[in-house]
Length: 520
Image 1: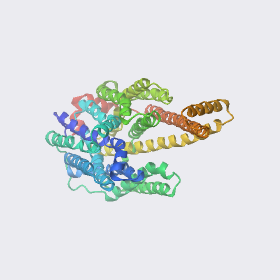
Image 2: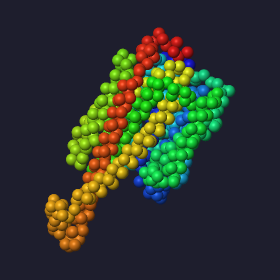
Image 3: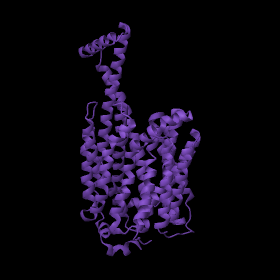
Image 4: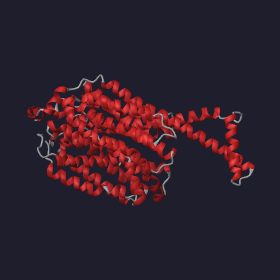
């Protein structure tokens, strides 16, 4: 498949579709309480609205490579975009929790395929000398969407209607389909390409079992029979999947790419960046809303400087990468992410919001330097353009798994450290400790002055002390979790130093004379 001259409208359509798919992984969280009231669902039941989306998206990603070869990459992308748009419509029309879950599964099936096929299309239709710019624009959809999700969701819930979270996708989905149909060419189609059914069954079982285990691990208990069974199922089915892909003539996923050293290292770096990035995106709202009492809208505005900075820096760095190389940008970007990350790990109830915004803006600039550029490292390490769709499948699977495991791990760490800090603080806060006694007496007098009896005032003072212990324990747990996220980024920096950048392929990106040899 040769690159196109007029590719930007098609790239815009791909970015728009990917943006919607990624956005819907986070935008629904703010509307959960509203949906619970409308559907009369319990907390455990409503969580499946979020969980079903994540599990389905991961399960269908391995199908992307096969669909592109068997039916054509353009037709496959249009079909996935149509499926996502229809799913969004059904979500907006949902009348019960069950119908919402079913609609989310349809939406996620389209979204998972759309993200993976879209990344492959960009690699195939964009000339190499323009690849940096195109991937930079594509990168905006990957990690700006989760950052602006809470802001948009908060606005829709407070000022419009929660169903608008889903129905807003419909006009954009139609526009994206029209642009793809008009401006992108079809790729090579192999109608006799066989479908690896066994590989799909094993991969879907492994991914769904693994992600369900990490999603429900903290809730059910990591040592519970349910979670252990899921992890064992993931291990067995994952082993069977690897064996199947190595022994069949037409594998669903070309896992032999993992034998390429720099492909695997680049994949690892990008996955760790995703963990560090999404860890902060999920932890800071806990700090803002649960500890500072801010609204979802306020939280979204707090996170906005990071999204703006990354949105500005990403395309710029993608353009200059061909001149300075990917590795220097990734290293500098990781430093820009890690240093503010260590400062963020010191947040407390007195931290200035302006300071937080500046730290997040610097961090956003770092993400703009390293996230999309790190996604190009494994793709450039492939070498053969025919294997790019397979590489896109693996990178998207790795990103989905890394994000889920990273978030689950950091939330679990936050919960466990909160309990430990609360127990430790409880041992220190005793009635015989003079500062504690003085505080309790002062609060008791305050409550008596408000009209409470001596006994009621004493009980209220003790209750207030307990709340403060829990709050400060939660702050310390948050600091520990944010520090862990920063250490993950530091580890990514160490691994990145081991990567040998494919400068020949990157140089070809900047030299249009090499284009036909690389893509034909």
